[in-house]
Image 1 (cartoon, rainbow, N blue to C red):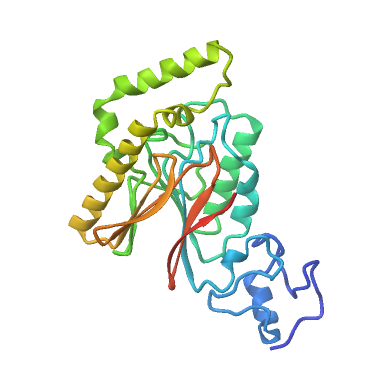
Image 2: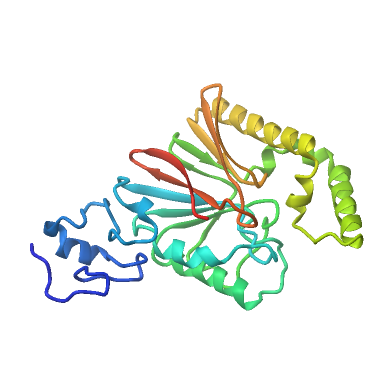
Amino acid sequence: MGVGKEKSSCGCAGCDSRLCGNGLSFAGRLQHADAGDCMVDGRDYCHPDCKYPEFRKTGIVNAVVLSDLHIGNRYFISEPLKGFLESLPPQAELILNGDTVDRRRFKAEPQYSESLELIARESRVRRVVWVRGNHDWKYMPPDAGKIEFAAHYEIGKRLFISHGHKFDFIMLVAKPLLNLVRMVHDYRVDLGAERAHVAFAAKKFEGLYRVLRRHVALSAVNFARKNGYEAITCGHTHYVEDLMIGGIRYINTGSWTEPPISYILVNDAGIELRRIH
């Protein structure tokens, strides 16, 4: 099996730029596998110049997990989404772990509509699971494609995937505190401060925010332990962290409303928390 005669702009035979920043369809990989540029059977997907090199030499990719895009929110960082989705290995499942949209009802401005269309498009070429969060609980996109909607998702006993709001018992009984945060934020805006996402405002109360994060992590880990999961991942708190608590791994992927933008890569080598932006 030799290299084909025709070359793409990235130098790969049979390249299909739909699949990564610089190409490589499955057919393209097969055509030039003997050249040593890529391997088959789900390994080493991308050309060395691919702008997401983390998808090279990482073993068989089972899933990529994102959370808290908050599409429709003014602070949603949309720029990296298209390139990131286009660079996903074709075998990878895409798991959207809650609060993919900011509200069940929002004005679908062009930049927001495009992001939803990208997700629907991915669902036609790979499995896409949209795990519900507290912001998008009953939301249905105009084009749902082949998206599967779920309250949670699991990858065997290796990883349980839940948005995290169901582990947040503090906020269930402390809505007055959230209202206080909003009132303080609005008051600061009236005094000339820049308007910010409510999560930014909540982080001004560092002690309370730390207690909230710890509470969600401990509740999630307790659930994982009782149900035999090795690891659990949540979003919800908008704070990226990777902890080992009592032998159970807890990973939070943060949000797309403020850097760092992170995701989880699950493959045969393990589970990794990685950064996009």
